[in-house]
Image (cartoon, rainbow, N blue to C red; front, side, top):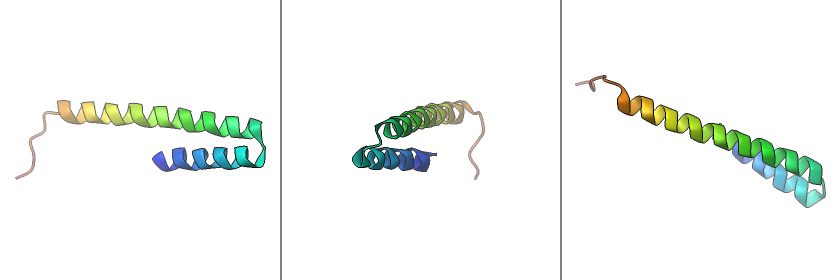
Length: 58
């Protein structure tokens, strides 16, 4: 998922450089949304992992 964030960010920079302002704005909004989803899922997985009651393998 982080790869998608980087891809859309690079596409936004490229579109802005070429003068496509509306497209660059859309790409940057998509990148921001994916980054937020990535961070939320990362913290959810950290919380689930820390609260699990599994014992580590021997």
